[in-house]
Image 1 (cartoon, rainbow, N blue to C red):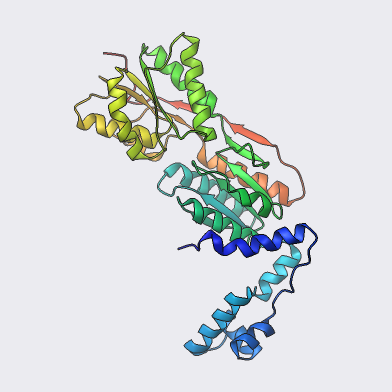
Image 2 (cartoon, rainbow, N blue to C red; image 1 turned 120 degrees about the vertical axis):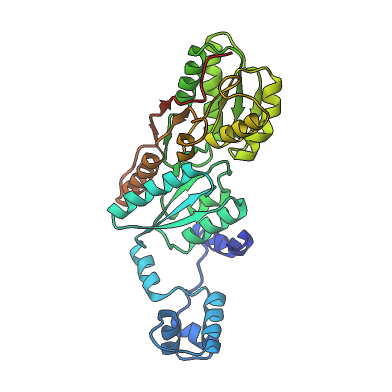
Length: 354
């Protein structure tokens, strides 16, 4: 379990003082740890490096001294002096969402090509996310960070900590986070999905939108509305979800009551939840209700019926974000914003109105 973010307030304050011209305290040495633990420096080294057997009591005292003093091992200190740890941090917000796993695989593949290690944080708890980022960046365990949101707000303190190392945003964009961004053309993909649905003859179309104020969700909603508006149509209803399966299930009642013959869902997980509930209620998919998702997660291709959706290139987004991070580490400036194309994937859940 990651520590509460309050634990890192002293570290944040240290950076604030340094940026305001206040001198930082001396970094603790192995001799300081030895004195605090009442052992020799060689014993501390043996405990930290596992080079010689030590008693449980000694190991516990050394661990407590290291934690109290905030000691960093010499190998890490050398990395700090060189300003390179040869590792990058990656934050994915929802490990249950296969799309973010695809992004992570892309980051990892690009990192390995450059001899870098990826340190992963996968959490759906905002406090843990902020604490983890703070710890990685302040302690300089990583040379940079790839941050994916999935609906989380961008941690405000990360702007302060991120001033020390490069940060790249993947998939989701934040107006108050001035970092390079790599994602997909969410608005264009949504427009294409809406156009395809219209071309199938649907005129009463509901929208299962994503979380409010999340960039990807708002881009997809805007794309759906753009295309419906081009035909002089308004959505049958707009229901908000949180990008997870249960919210798709919960949206089913309002969507069915709207009389919609088709639904444009802001991601596949919500579309899957909606389909599951409709099928259980005897609603035929696509006979009574057509559904189009967004992401093209692996489940979409073996769901019954197979899900029509918009494919966004998760691995390519991850590789692009890692490439932007490497560009910064090499002392160059990457593109501010890179949007990768999406692709319509037509399967079984889209038909003509009955």
